[in-house]
Length: 452
Image (cartoon, rainbow, N blue to C red):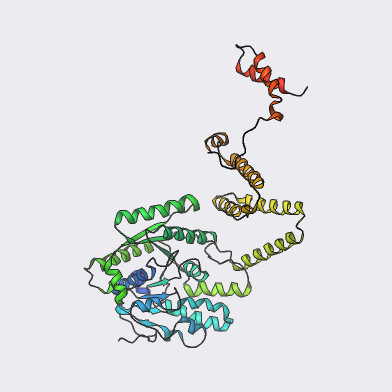
């Protein structure tokens, strides 16, 4: 078996693409791609590894950071089991050069890259030493690919923010689309302003892949006001499944093999997309240096490119909520206190009425323990909600007519306050001439029912 670990100062063969951007590896930032997903089980790591191997096979200098977990899933797919990872470098147990693993076609792998978040726990001096080493390492490559943690884990969000380009892997599974949408929404809320790319995995053909992307893109445009970029697709392929079990990625198969060839197409599309993006002036190490400095100073980053986790703000918000809860619990009979508190909260929400606010209000109402109310209280609650719905609806009267009556609707009764006694109304109707205009007829009825 090949030597898995080696020193990063080795002499590498010249890239066959040594021109332009690629000839200056070591003097400028590489193209950094974060490959992520809203949920696990969508084939994100398989795509990361096969794409990295394909780029390396094409002659690029490629570094793959396994930031999914500390279990080195990327390496396991190659049948390699590393003894060290980046978390051990952060802990001071070994040097960065000790964790670099060799893979076919000259691909380099750093297992346990999620451990870079531990830089925030280091002192300034130790943190700088590690981050300088990481900066020197990444400048040796044309491409740096990050296999991030799936979902909304803070380290995964940071990895996406550190990259020049984010690629979100989805499948035709509806839950995959829902979770991917949640990931995009969280990124946008936390200041991410770049356009995410999408790879559709396990598609049954081009038409299905396009349809899956269109659904996600339409939802992002409608609810988030942002568009997505279609990078490509990987077809549902039994060969890929077998390659995972055999721990031999399809990118190692002959280039003429259909399973291998689709990753070459994906790599070509990646190159085109990076050519459309402005070059980044800072890499992963510089980003994590800023994050660690902010964490120590507890100063939020005003940069719109930041995907800050907002943990300080969240803690403050949770503390205020707890204080409000204690205050209300200590004064259960203070109805006016509750009235003012909740009106103030809804007034804050109303400052930015958008789809997110609507979702927050709906979720808040759904969380109320209305099932514990008595039947009359539930009917009272339902009437108020229907009145609110009629106010919000564009055509409240039509909506009220079209709505099917609920089982809890009260039986309609004659309104004496609005129309007076029934006998008086009937008499007034009979006394009106047959040929009177409608507007005069209504005016006379109103006059007859007005207080005397």
